[in-house]
Image (tube, rainbow, N blue to C red):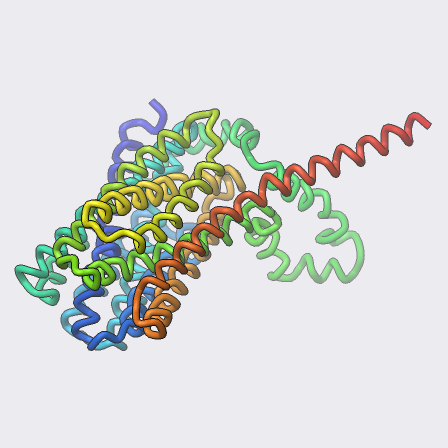
Length: 455
């Protein structure tokens, strides 16, 4: 069996780590309601707490990607688990905005990224044929966590106040250390198996990536060769050139660049909804515990969507990029519908659908990086993709908070989230268009060469 018994253990550990890290992050949407009361309805200041956390959580990917080349996945997760727990513990101890920016925003955000990223990457490294399924199942942990933790947080707040409940949430977060200890490095036999199958993997890589990598090889004699121009000798010897050809070459791939822009858009939209939906529901007259339950149903949809995305991503005749784009667009439309409805059952239904689409997006996130760049560049690609995610997540809540202050309502903010997400999904259409234009251009050149040869 591919991956073996330890492969299953790794997927389970990654599932639980994502259950905890994403679950606590989603629960903070419930705490945002309490923060608004505590800090006297300063929506912009409160949104900045969550935006820093989400931005650092998702934006520290390149840093964590570098650490994974120097240290074991297990060690990084263990250190990250301690950091994220300390960041949560300091919220009730130092309930001041500057302290929350530092401890929850920066420390907890970086700790969550150090816990999430290595476990997610490792769940994919144990598998080749079933990589989409393994990473999708691991990702579904984020959906289940976002279903369970908000309702748990809502109950704990009612029983122990928001400060007391955070001590319990911190204890739950400490379990990252337990599951992080299970992250066994990939055995040499598995590495060899994956290496031997690189030829098969590369046949699935986007043509744009192939051309980019080929250009790098072909241009060695003219751009980084020490046997050509003196100027290029200096460039070849510089650290900048080495860094570019080792890391930044991924941005020569048009598809990957568009994919990163798309991730900025949908993360901006998701950060807005996660941060402000609970308080918006309370404004609409929904009880706080009921608002937490709607967030829970959204998380349940994310869990089911993650499993569905993992299965659909392995179906040969389904276009993964098209499915990803569709999920983005439907999520954006759900943001509009949320403003148009007022019935509690309708809130539950739309919340479930939006969560389901979000789950599909998360399930396909990693495997699409492999489609664009190949297995051998997964670490670099995921690091830069998480940086794009962090930019979107950091920008979303402050923008929405400022819009709320100007208009006195969250409705314009939700409309903004919907528009941004729909635009992000539509951007992915550029990839097949660019590919079609490039294929036409090649056919024209081949025709001209053929005619010239005949003459």
